Length: 400
Image (cartoon, rainbow, N blue to C red; front, side, top):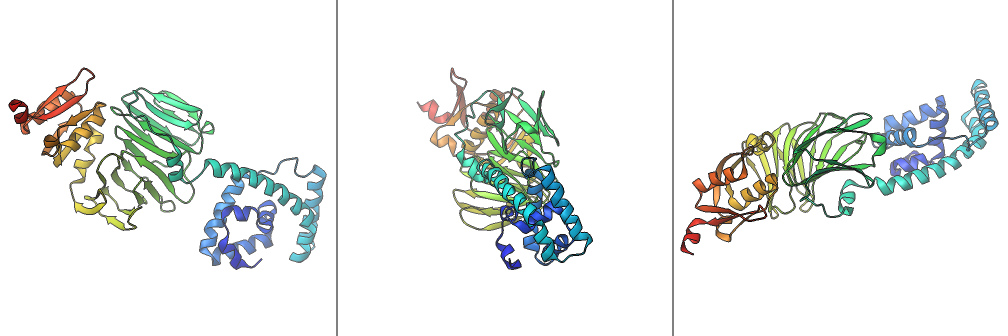
């Protein structure tokens, strides 16, 4: 095979290549020199080879049913004799051909079965997200979904989840990672919040009404998560593995930084706010790329993109129980408060467009916060028997 052909290889192609498998099985000096030469000369191919090595070590196992003990002993003895006698590569391959061929045949079967199963479960994270059923964000509890048949219910108002090397700690629960599927999910309903610390040290705060999808283990070349809702994230730096936050409309790429992503599907405004470091934002629809500096915000309002300077601390204050807003429409304020407190807050058409600036302490009772709004806006609030609220223009109510 010509070396150039390797440029078209995927990791799985290498796992089906006899020369590659021989190298992994026997680690012969000449094979090692051959592959290291390719790795040095072809950086792009080298990345795929390294991925194939990792997959080989993690998923390909040569069990007793492949070769009998006598066959293994005979092939290894023949191999050692060939090395000791300094035979050329062609002769050595001939001696090994029978044992390697047998190994490869079974390896092909194992690889095919393993990766057929793996490709079904470990698909692209965006594709996986699209296959999920609609999320119930009106639930009373946060849900940590580890597999199709393993969901942990968390009743705390503020849930804490931590991934260690071998286990997952979720409030008072301890689960071994071996009991999880390729992708896990956290669903934080309205009125609840949660935090998660990944095994690489990255920490994520999930706001109310948010869903986070992530792999049970990050890949060796990148770290990806998918967000529907709002998160604040402090990414642990890893120059070899960029961190990518995916939403329905954007991809945010970083190495190590602190930023906020607001991507609620029903909100007309989607945004990324950078606290420190640097991020690159790519639009899934427009194909444009935006680079943010600290205290800048990227926003997408119904397809119109912009970047402006802001005070980033105001946009991440929700993680500390504060809500700061500047010249924000009341319908947006009502939506955020409704999600945070787990109730529905609606506005009439006129009231929805009113703008307001200020700061609210989210540790206070919702009625108290709405009373604060009535002091600066010409509105009244009413609560129905179900605990939901309506905001109406005070003057229009008085006329009626």
